[in-house]
Length: 208
Image 1: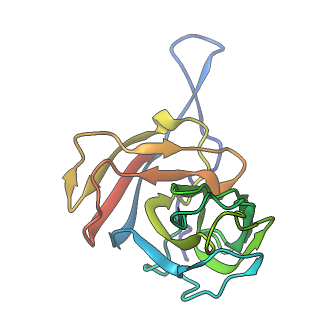
Image 2: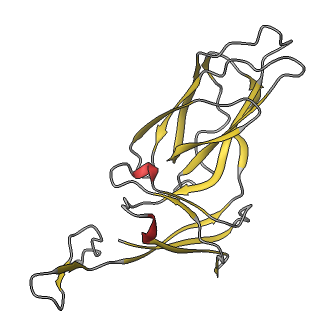
């Protein structure tokens, strides 16, 4: 007879020491996404002129096939002209569970921004509303890659559920930066305090 793995999402209640008050039994989880590489700021789009339309993709997956990461978007202003009108980027791909995921983000001149969602794959990146500054000699340039923030495989309701993280089997002295969502899987992300990542084991410990 096969045994099913423990379902951490199954409701677990316990009677407390106060009659009529029930508590929730937590499940401790260790998510080990493996050896995570440092950020690659042009993995998907190597520095090119900004435009309206689809950007050519150099890659469609993350460095680690089973890991989802936030995307990193960097815009460099064309000197000595003014800032272009940035418009928006629509990113289409999948989340850590392989489900369709779309995010629209407004890049910023001479600034690096990250997506809110963690993507496992990237299928297309399309610019809209961009316009070159009239005083500029050429277009601003953009590159798009991976950040070091990665997605969790669980829906969380409280950032305090994430207890700690470790890098290369050493507990991080500073707690990671955590975002959570009880409804959108791709919005549950972790960013370790130590940067850059070094291609060594990463683990995140949290309660469900």
